[in-house]
Image (cartoon, rainbow, N blue to C red; front, top):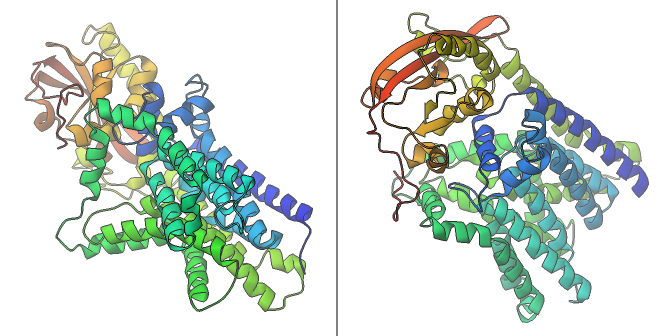
Length: 537
């Protein structure tokens, strides 16, 4: 027994509306993470590409903030909220076409339950946010083209559209190349007749043309982005099981352990011979997901990786799992349509995510628990390594530092709009976004290429530092620096201007120290983005 498509669509739209409201609330009330606030600079200083990622995430921020006329967390993250709703509906439509509307509802639940797809790429504004949208659209159009019995005009049109989506995914993040790899593997292994059809090559050409901005920018900048990422993933000869287990555990956590179990159980069942969909559609989905997962899991044996790198590989596996568990319930001869569309094993995954999300939101915004150092005899490291503070307290710091800065100006100790300096893009970009930039203080970032990334260019746009210039430095103790060791060589004097407390639930979480760095000696080796040969440290 099934339910009507119209009723299924209403159920999925309710899922989308409720989850979008939750995402918008969280996105509008939580301060930015390290990565998000850094991608603000992509919109502030747009380029054809950037040091560490293609330009799409910056374009999305520009679009939803009306070119930074609305530079607030909600609007900066609004792209993620909107895209997650679209992606949920795409998951529903894909699974419905492969099986039926109940399978589509399962896919919507499982997508909404994925921490990577629904939270990381659905609330936060990171390169994965637009990448996941175009990845899902690629899956949709590839399934509408590659498995067809007869290659006709409709199939060709859908494949060309898939090529466009692959190109846009690549403009979001370099991982988009794995979609193209999946297409090539499918055609080579499963359906070589596509090699003889012009539309395959046309789709590839469209994808390559989309990547022109990235290639051109890298050509003009000594291919620095490719050099940076190749250094990150080049395997070493040292076996690192700690990296491997962290990657493996991270994949389970990022995709929701409940989801991960449902996906693995589905793949095992299919490997044992369970038929859940037509063979060609299954192959398209597997080739779209498994190569990315296998590559980065293998890299982790020798090189440090991040679990979200493999995140898009689980998107087609969510579709497979939804169809598989729908078939399992058919086999169980369940007759109640109401129970069919919300079985415990599917809805349980969403419930698990809701509990985790509520706990995380409380920990970051309301918890009196300090997970870092709390030794009052060592205030310069108070709260160190408490990850919950990365997204909390920056507005407090701005509010409490402003009177100190205003007093400095009144007493002639510092010039109005004196520059700030930071060391490394995190937490330097937090200080830039929440303190320096809104108060018209240019931020100059110190550090090597690995430590400042796009700020090598931003420093140039903002005029760098002049000899004899006096600047501010904010030292937050959860990312504490030895100020004298860091800056004494480059400034004539270092003066402490003040210290403010960051509290949460009435409890001290960390300190923020404001320093005056007096008399720049003009001797810091800033990375030069315009030199002919870039060396990544």
